[in-house]
Image (tube, rainbow, N blue to C red; front, side, top):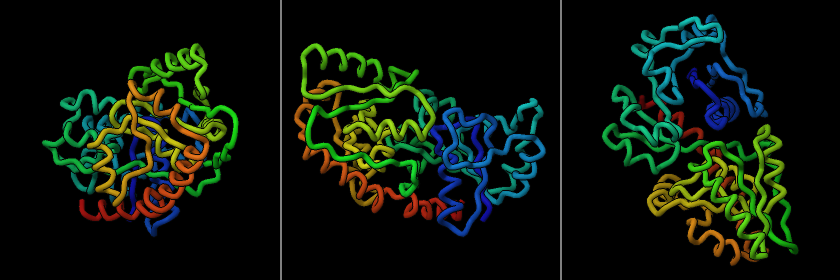
Length: 311
């Protein structure tokens, strides 16, 4: 099977990871059309198809089209870097295809993104009720947990635990403003942990910087982000605000729930304070084991192939 992933932008590096997993662990072949460059680096060295003649050639080559977001699909055209238009109309009409929504803006303005003519995949399960009328399917973003870029966290036995969070320009959606406030509160009250904000940098450097900490705080928005799954792969203690619905759907998909510490803005400081070094290290071991045995990219990429076969 020849599978073409089509994305306007990086989308948390998810399309590139799917392409890598398909090519590495299955008998099928995948390629990626993505007009915008990887602004945070490309550690998997996935080639980007960007020129109009290459786009047309890839569309002819493909047997399945996997759109990441509805931008190109709804307009049925792609602009290359020279603003030349490549029409998608005949390919959408003749080839099996799906749309994969990765959250914002789909989560915030769902009516704008309703597409009833094909199957829709959702990257996080809290969007299932939002798009219920078009019968979406939850399929998580996957990570090749064997990659060398996932530097394992070294267990700590003494000193203050360090809680890291990643800077986001969408501070309200990622609770970055709350992390700033928590950092000031922890310092003012001399609490028993330290807060570390990781700035934007290339992905491999980001993963290394994260591994120098003990706990990764994603956000408390009711679900989980890619930071949470990357944290699991790195063997870290992961805290987020995944609610009961999200955790239940994860349990249904994987057969068991991930070892997230589920918290809230109200309880976050207290939940972190309760953690001993032993508990943090135990969580880290459980995280990596879960990723390799359950949320494994190698293990689950075949389920995406089965999905394609049913289109």
